[in-house]
Length: 242
Image (cartoon, rainbow, N blue to C red; front, side, top):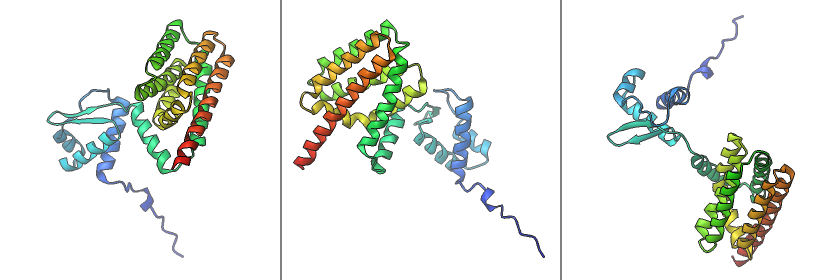
């Protein structure tokens, strides 16, 4: 009886050729490249991979979409490093398209920011505390400018994540800013929310000055809990009016 024939078709790379080349260039960029370095010309890449320049152009466009390459008209392609804003925009689209509930988003905010402030409390410097003070002073000065007030609020929380000393945690908190912006806006717009937020931020700084992680966690939790209540109140009013 004839033996069973082994099907090897699944082992073939079924990606389009331009995507395979983009993957290859991406690997070289990640492990060998430096930001602002120029990639070889289209002609050189075409010769290196044995494909047409059209395929190379498609590969470079894909790398540009991935945030790894900047294509300059008449200047060639240069290596770029994806920023947290790129991740933030992508995350926002995923949250919106997957209809992820506000409660789930906010719970993740609490998990990340509590972890960040716990670490920051044990290592924060006097200079970093001064910078946080300046940030809250800026929030107070910008109370009548919603866009600036929101931006400074986001930056305050990103600074605490940065001061945690954990680069990955800092990146995750920064990447959440796009998703959280609507919550921060709603909280500020709620009755007394603007002033309350500023007061809670100052309480967070006071707790950080003690260098006591638990005190800092309590201050952050109190702020986020109050903010969430303000957000729900504001969103409830919005839904009733529509």
